Image 1: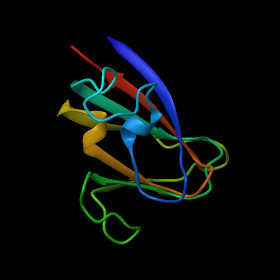
Image 2: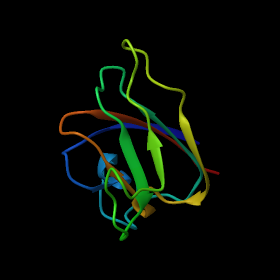
Image 3: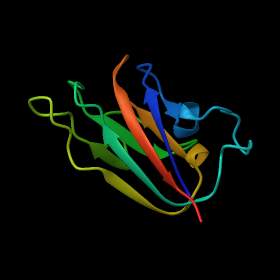
Image 4: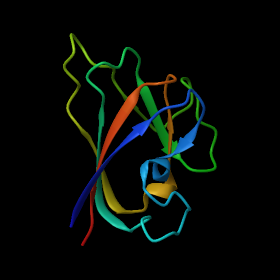
Length: 106
């Protein structure tokens, strides 16, 4: 099954599950995924940073970096292979920027 969401970033570290209708970790929407596709919004001016929940996440300490859009065109999606739950992933990005999320469940 495929589900898609948009996470609006706050400028502070957030869980990827904050994009879900029920944001509680382990809640009914926090499904185990075989893959999670992530893509920065086309209007984003800054990079986004991804890491494991509960670990330090900054623009200097991160698991992976999702580049900002170039001339309104977002970079190719970043794909996390599972099994992984959205609540296991932390995201850091500038306030008001967007992250498109596609959850692929079994």
